[in-house]
Image (cartoon, rainbow, N blue to C red):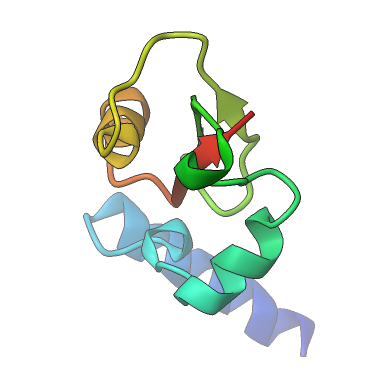
Length: 92
């Protein structure tokens, strides 16, 4: 069993190094993101005006102090992450 896990890790690392998709490139379903982000993401309609984002499923959430226009949070997050952000939302 340990050898199988070792080989799986090695093959996954090799695929990522050769340009294959990594585990962080898989987007979580919207329902899962909504549940996870519930405490952080209040939404624009609730008065939230700070763009919060997470670049990878396992990374830290960041909240910007920069002014981000309505509808531009995802684009801003993508620019900061240098890739499509794992999650982006409006928080207070």
